[in-house]
Length: 150
Image 1 (cartoon, one colour):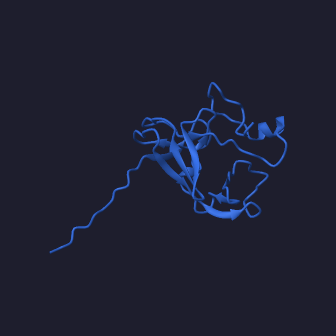
Image 2 (cartoon, helix red, strand yellow):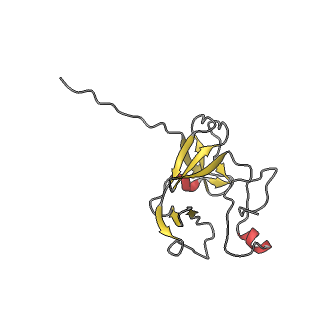
Image 3 (cartoon, one colour):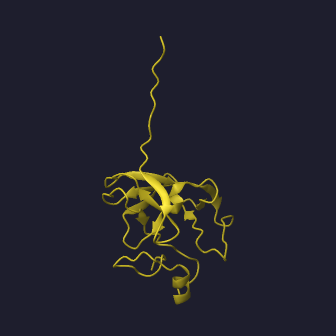
């Protein structure tokens, strides 16, 4: 008698496609309830010193961890790397056991783009020039004009 095998179908909740905010974006393909863990932010783990820092491409974002490592999504990254910044986000990133997970802050409807607030920190004083370098184009009513944490 043949054994029954259990197959687990992973619910596909998101897809990457063109975004009006910036380049590519991540969209819900079905309703996502508030509090749902949507995706892990993955990539190669390196030290800050070894992390990519291309002066000509300020939009390569490495995710810093509390243990001092950095997640570089250019190597081994997944769709989470395409989630755009917004000053009025519907998602939030949390660190759990040296891993980053993206959670829904409220119910997200199918077709809605996913966003979290990058609240970026830089190793230099925040100036008008650095604000422009990391300009925000989210269009939210409370947009602060930059992806930097002010």
